[in-house]
Length: 68
Image 1: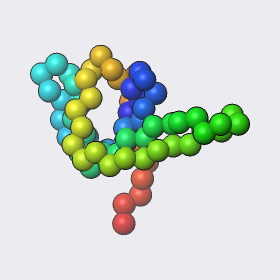
Image 2: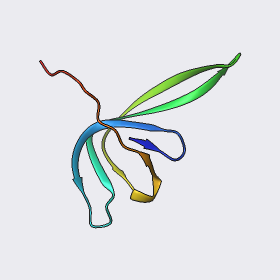
Image 3: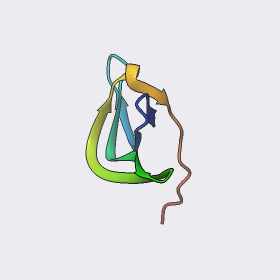
Image 4: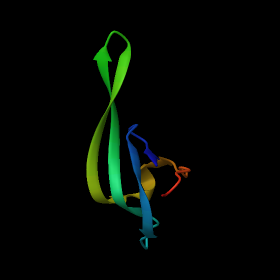
């Protein structure tokens, strides 16, 4: 899920709340930062449980990941 400020949240869907905000579990946040010279680097941070407000959501997509 991408939010309007450019951050990316990757996790497993848990539920929606009454305001249509999405709750993810086992969630990681990815922040793309400028490291100079026109290059960007993704900083990864484990969050666990995340509530993303509906008004901040820019794009939702499903990752196709094969489970073992």
